[in-house]
Length: 345
Image (cartoon, rainbow, N blue to C red):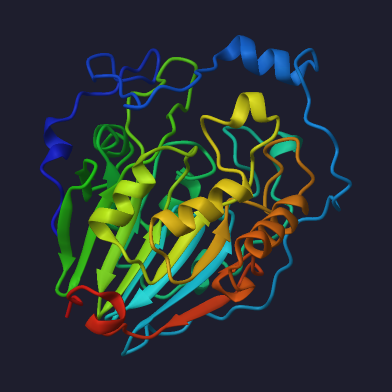
């Protein structure tokens, strides 16, 4: 894969503030509430509305042993490494999405943001990684220590606005993509940047200087879709209409409470089921839960609410699973007749 040309043309990083002063600010094209630092303080100081307690267990996700192996020769294998991190293996290639192997998802080791379940494996155990896809710049999705362990020559595929920032940190191959851009990154493997409703920031000074997205990966007759980080929005129906049906989705179900604050940014389990249906997923795994304590809901609540909503909608529980960290799903090629469109070969 060749480096994106955007790397050389991106605005240089300001050493005083860590921001991109001349880069545009991105926004969501749908109307929604927007929250700022004062709202974070209201939430954290307990002077804003709180969601009622559900009585769900406050337990992180379970884990199982995982020993990485070579990519399958037919179809794909998708493995949940924890939080929103996935290892996707197929067509002889190994891809990572939003890898975070660090013990904290923060700029400093705040106890409240400590990892509660170890990653499914160590970076050193991974097969040679051919490319990393990043959904946005938040610390629980863009983890610099993990990227540095993977090596600064590993190709990175990112939403618009991140290449310059990563380039100043020594990453040599960075390719930017905008929503619905589609590119062949290796022979027989294509990726599409998909819309999401979210925001970006790593400091108080760089809000929305980079964009956010999900990723569709197509190859060997299989479509895999990682939703990124998102609140519910009209984009999901459009994704289904333009890119579906999808063989395997990776859809967030956690970090949604208190709802008055988190609604624009994160899906509830019930909304995640709606996304599952609107995007035409045949099968899905739940992400963005059970690894870090980011918000107020009990850590064991998201999978309970997911199971209840699947039952209410008459969807077999095996189709949308809140699995174990380290769990893998084998995805054989879908025929054109099964999918209703032309398979990528």
